Amino acid sequence: MRTAAIDRNYGAAREAYALRGVDTEEALVTLSSVPLSLPCWQGDDIGGFEKGASGAPGGGLQVTGGHPGKARTIEELQSDLETGLSLIPGRHRVNLHAMYGDFRARPADRDAVEPDHFLPWADWAEERGLGLDFNATCFSHPLAESGFTLSHRDRAVRGFWVEHVRRCRIISAFLGRRLGSACLNNLWIPDGSKETPSDRWAPRERLRESLDAIYAEALESELLRDSLESKLFGIGSESYVVGSHEFYLGYALSRGKMLCLDLGHFHPTESVADKISSILTFFPELALHISRGVRWDSDHVAVLTDELLDLAGELVRGGRLGRVRLALDFFDASLNRVAAWVIGARAVLQALLRALLEPAERLRRLEDEGDRTAWLALREAAKTLPWGAVWDAHCLRRDVPPSDSWLAEIRAYERRTLSERGGDGGS
Ligand code: RNT
Ligand code: ZN
Image 1 (cartoon, protein in one colour):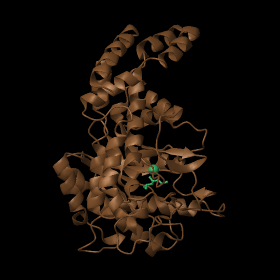
Image 2: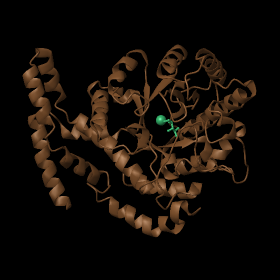
Image 3: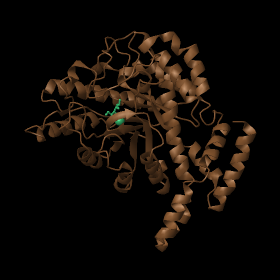
Image 4: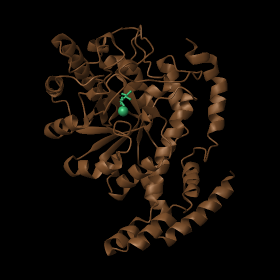
């Protein structure tokens, strides 16, 4: 669309919102300040760069599709991320996993990873003014094949994973310091079983001990934050997951850690949006993994669903946007992987924009007055307000293509770069 048309449409939209008591300019200032953390693992189907990596992540994580052009090296992944980031309005972050270090000169098993393995990422992020977040990789490894890691019955196996996660915190602290931006060190483990175990207690007791050993080191600071991600079930852990929501709720609250809620890690009809006000009543902050489960925790690319709108509304209405860390978590190999980042991130930003443009004050007043009829009428009317015109204007101001015109740049990148890599990553 022409710039002039976008300007014109925006002018009309601005007026339409003003009539409802909404300042679109203010909404755009807030929107511009929200960072999203992009999952590096969407770029290579959670393959990672370790020597001898099998290619399948395990731990119940399943990536489907074989679109050509998968990133095979750090440099390729960085180039893909740069392309994706250039098409998403705002300043964002990249979420790394321990398996994405540079192990070419100094191979290391998981219990030997060090900050040096992540220097190419730190240098790259520093040069581009990006923040980095980090995750321990407790899957895709022979010692995770039993389905248990930090709660494994064998002390030696537990010790291996404790050492891995302990080191991941050191790496996160390094990245946070180096970039001057708090690195979120998130922990998710696959531990669980296909059948209901006779003993649900012992693995949870062991997980608590392992976590206490990991967090014993007082590394947490303004530049390192720890979060723990629960799960309901996984492929191979259908009946029992050691790190359940209740487990981490108790652990995090008692230890001063942050919770991470993944949209795919609850019963399909359970609302994560509804949990936020309960959690933030007791916790200072909350981390979110924005994912889209289809029938199960399938990690589809985020799109503008009612669920996402509801979540964004909850964060914005409560004025709690500053207390959440938003990360995307999906992996889809059935489409252009760079486009997946762009589609997912733009959807999350659009959901936030729609929430920021809600006639919130009026709705709240009607609710307080108990006028349910007017409240519902206004809420429905607000859905038809021209938020798309505000979005397009935002894109132009932030120097990214509006609407779906960003796709042309992805296609050009695909022709120029991705096609050189061959089918299914060329390997
Ligand atoms: C798995 C969790 C976890 C992973 C990433 C790759 O169910 O959602 O966050 O997706 O660590
Ligand atoms: Zn997740």
